[in-house]
Image (cartoon, rainbow, N blue to C red; front, top):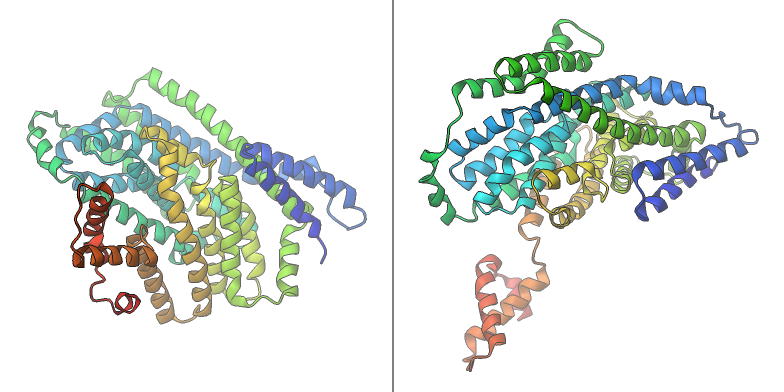
Length: 520
């Protein structure tokens, strides 16, 4: 197999990332290693020589619309964040969120409404929800995890988010129609499992601390309510971007509707906020300065990732190498989406960037599925996008850090909640994509597979604290303590064991289980 040397930059980047180096340092070092290999082997292996002109055309010029869209959406995010509209949302929640069940329902809804950008959703929703999480004694890392999973899922699916230009740009380079970015949502297993995780976390938070609900209902009358004018303004600002995007896309038929919609949204948002005295000129200046600082750092990281992808793909032929491996190993067709999902998940987890994974594995998905039907190509693209969402579980994930910052929670506690979810999602995702590839042309098979995935993941969440071994141990302990008349004599170990068995007896519910009776 030729082009085997294209794997060397990946090894370099993985080693640096595992040693705790920043993403842009690892990507630029790996890209430089690939450039050196390219110059050493260009003549003997007929490789296209890496030049600065090619780099500028492919990385900078080819992604200029993406960079501009990110800056504009970042400016819109900072304008909303620095305005008094967050205070209005807090007042509205103080009036209506008089129980933890209502509050925990509002959090993911608000995160979806602010999903034009994942940074906007994480910062704004986290800032609003932090105060009420303390009120209802809901762990803040629970709230941060709910916001993180909801924001990433909504941004991945929405055609008007800051993720959309990155995904559509990768699809354009691969020769795939742009509408595949929306259609791929039907095969995005990770997004589906994220939503189930959010529902489960919300349910766990809503059913806890019931005694605190009545304690705060009596105090709601003393809270200042938001005016009807403020509510209308908040709804209008949230709806500006999607409405302008649909108008420019469907009515005006503009080639880059997201850039035009972002400019119009910024202009209209500033007018609405300024006329209603929700923002002033110094706050607008501060929002512009923070946008330049934050988005320049993000753009630099993206350019380093795009450079790494260009060196590996164009200069060293990484996609050619993977295609050759696929043909030499005679890999069955049904394993292609699962393999794409797995390597995209590993790469995005190590780098902490979904954007880089989109640009690398969407073209690879197009190349591996080029000889098959359009439906199979759509499934392969969806597997690459789905695996790229594992960036939120990374140690260098920026959205996880923002959620921890906005909710004032510890990032280690968020990871303790997210890592068990990641293991289950990875295993179920691999099996799910194998099954979906097997029944690709059968609608009934697709529905049955999705149903099985949902049921398996839901069951795994409901039993995540106990394995079968734990169930049997507790069952034996309970039976022995019930049948044998023990004299405690103040022995704390025996008392604790009986309390432990009684506490979890209802959760085990294996009294009628033949399996446990056979073991006993």
